[in-house]
Length: 401
Image (cartoon, rainbow, N blue to C red):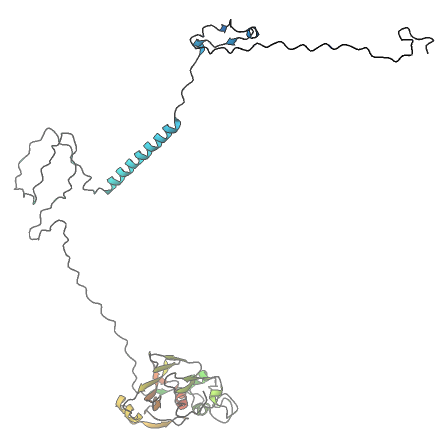
């Protein structure tokens, strides 16, 4: 590219060397003069807005301090002790509330006569007109006040109650005592009249209506469910009334069907004496005594069958017992149940009496047909059925329980 070597380049073939530049020796830093701390200045010495130091070193000649003039200086406001003020206010409010509450309670507990104050005494006293009638002196002279009363001031109420002079002819009462009062005379209430017991004498009753003349009344036909218009409901060759009295079923064509094998009757067993009997299932059996010695079989139409067990310590015969309790009823007739128990029946046929021995004790068991407000023996055949079924298993049984 070039025909000749540039004039500024060396012509020799010696290697190029960089020029050596001498490094000057490090010069140590100049010594630093120590700073002089200015002395604190008092407020009195602050007079000018600018203070130029004269004794400070040269390095601090450029520094200056600007101070607010004293005429513009305002001292900081003192802070109020709010916590102490709040605590004092709270204590004051509590004390004031307590005083108000105590005053209210005290006023509410003052009796009405204590709350009345004597009106202020006037300085000018009106002339007193002497009374025309003699004045009765009080029973107790008034107590003179210990403290003179200042005009215009209220006199404190007296705690001594006023004394009322006794009425002539009466005994004065000492204050603080209680006069005994005579209790009023009361008339004891009249005890209620006990109900009149039913008449259980042997009264004759009229026979009940019987349309089919089978010996079974029309109302009895309804109780056992037989036909009141047909004498032999089950067509077994026996009338309904005859079958019932002999404890056969009047509703079964089988003439050997027993009445206790049907559902038209219930069985009753006395829990203590142990006797048993049959009664119509629509009726209700209940005890009327606490010892259970009287059982009532309640029927409709105002009729009841009553079975009563009475101890027989004298061991009277049934005829003697009946004559003792029914002396005017007349002669009795002998009767025998299906189980073989012997007894007697009244002339009307409405009282039957049996003597039994149960658990080593003699008893008199009495059956009675009792009509209420009726003169008709509506259920006489059913009553006779119950008597016929009466048995004591300890002696002899006719039908199984």
